[in-house]
Length: 186
Image (cartoon, rainbow, N blue to C red; front, side, top):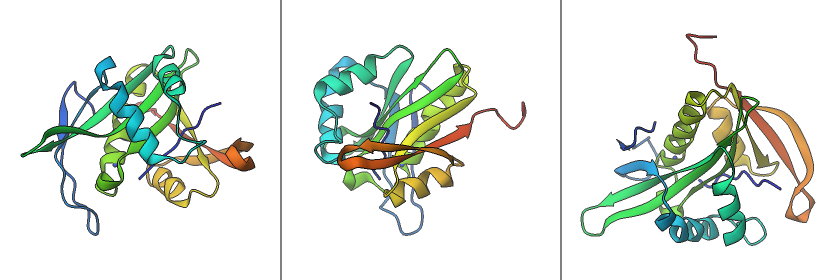
């Protein structure tokens, strides 16, 4: 069962960004890059901080999702003068042969939320899926996760369905979808 989740912020092989929307956290410099095997324990720890028991992935589940055919993981490292680089968040997504993409999870540490990092990770995943030939992208969000639903709607996702009892506690999920055709080719 997939648990595409959002916890509330383009990838070249190394891209950086700053963000300070009004009313949000202070600017954070970060670099987006592909996750490597050496990053796994940090990513799993972030997932544990971002989601409650039952929704947070086990090590085995996260490993399986990250290793699925067509899957990729992009992480964001915050750059701190005193402490060096620290992983602040990540996205796991996948493409399939039918031209569809899927966001499995977006995780951003609480201290880095509301600084645009989730948006940067989502855009990076969308760009990567578009480059791999995906025409659309889907994800799931709990029907009571108002912040996640608003986030995805801001990024032009539409609710296209629901899945009964998708999450623990018989919580339903909305299925959200976005077309990935560029405006030039549409």
